[in-house]
Image (cartoon, rainbow, N blue to C red):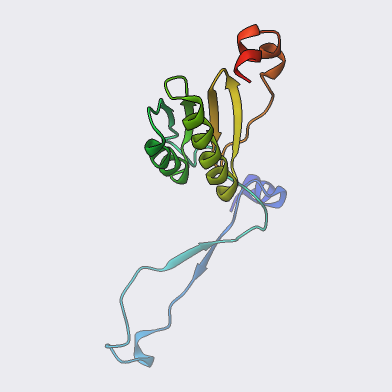
Length: 149
């Protein structure tokens, strides 16, 4: 191992590989032995290191339900760790309230979040997505927004 590799491993920037040798064949029967290459194991560090590229196919689903029956499909997307934007402008107010109640319960059970991002438009996120900021200050000035509340 070179000086640079030792220095990098000392700082924790490079992990050292450890070679684990297998026992010789003479001590066991051939039935007990499964041939395989020499195993290499990396030293495990304790810490919360997460790969940036852990989720390559992150999807955001846009959904415009026309009845309460479609709320379960939206909940299935949330259970699959997909963010859903729900536009409730095409359903009656009583059905929109039922859909939001159902989705609020689903999001709560999954540890996610729900935010109103417009007039009858909601953002539902699973626990893997964090919502930061609000849009309510912008919408509070809008007269249409106040009527829909």
